[in-house]
Amino acid sequence: MTWRDFVSLFLCSALFLSRAAAEEIPVFDLDHCVRTALATNPSLPISQKDVDIADARRRASGAALLSALTLKASETRGRAADPSDLSNTPFLERSYGVQATQPLFAGGRLWASRRQAVLGSEIARLQLEKQRLDVLQATTEAYWRMVAAGRALAALREAHGKIQEDLEKSVRHELSKFRSARIELLSTRVQNRECEASIAEQEEALARSREALMDAMGERRAVEFRTASEIPADHVEVSEAEVIRLVRDHRPEFRISEKLMESARMARRISRAGLDPRVDLNGFYGRSGAAYDTDPFHYQPSWNAGVSMSWAILGSTAKVTGFREKASPELGQSSRTQTDSRTASLGLGDALSARVESMQGRRDYMEEEWKFEKDRRDLEEEARSALRRLRAAWSRAAAAQSRVEESDQQFKETLDLLKEDRAHLGDLAAARLRSAQTRAAEAEALAQHRIALAALNRAVGVADYFGK
Image (cartoon, rainbow, N blue to C red):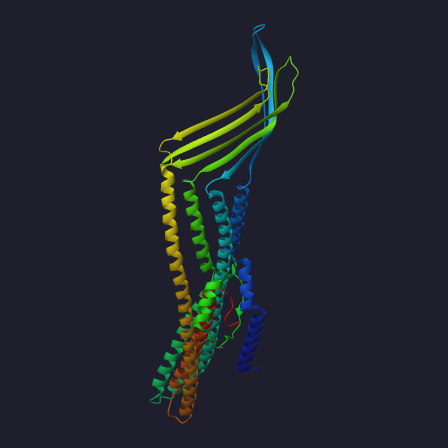
């Protein structure tokens, strides 16, 4: 076996091993990356927790509309002076029952708080949907950038191998000491170094896109994988009217803005409730009793009921209460007691802050109305901008495809000129590099078109609506 046979065998073995190693690396398509991202991206569980918290607040606001019930039980032991024998006699007092409080009217505060909680739950779900769309777009963008970098790197490496062969030929020509051989060698060497620099740039771009894709998928450890090499080049026609309709019907931010404005309206109602009358009902029902240790202990029914009304008038709070009670005998009492009481009070200047809160609520609602109109215009303009970027990206992709055809034709012509001895290897290396660079540019342009398409889907709020 000659040394040439040995080198050939070694190269074939290395090529076989490299192909075998490459076959072991899994190939991830876009669907796989998207499924992985939606399953493992850490931002989505956090958004889901926000939904759970909002649901818990909604349930709590519903419970606030019902009567507040409190189970009560008490026991008191002590000693009391007996006037008959001037000694301390032990005694016992016990009571148990249910205390209830029910707001009858609060100026709409409770219902507005309930509506606010419901809106908060709906907003949290829309925020989760928004986060899912963000993850989907980030994954799609990183994926197509990685595919483009991989295609560009493959084209440049293939050209580099051919240019290396041209460089070896130009070295042999230079040794023949022809006058043009030196120029040929220098030109070919320049193209070789230029190709190596382009390869290094694409390797860096591939590494960055791989890292971005792993972050979008939520991978916490290094994973070796490859992506598909094909990039769809189909053209998608989209009308502006359809885009605006989809934004208004499906964009999460648009609906979030609507619900935030309604929530601000509820907040204004809550702030105004401090100026309206408030009526509350409260009561207790149970059994109680008291006795000296020398006397028998008996439980008897015990209850009380009351109603209170307060109203902020001219910065002061007027309050009227009515209370009725029927209690069991307490220590030292010989009969049951039943009382009716009514009170009225006026707190001077203690309701000035209620008017300030009402003014603040009105101001916040006006601001939210302005924000809603601004957000609506901004979202529609964002969708129009995404549509314009999509059309521009397709134009660039079509131009890149035309440049590939042009560079291929130039390469063929340069090859013919070389055969006729009207061009040298440096010209051929330059044509090879130009062809590889245009193919790399084509891959980048096609990837940018897919990224712009994903951005448009994100702008209208529907994943994969265009260009499925």
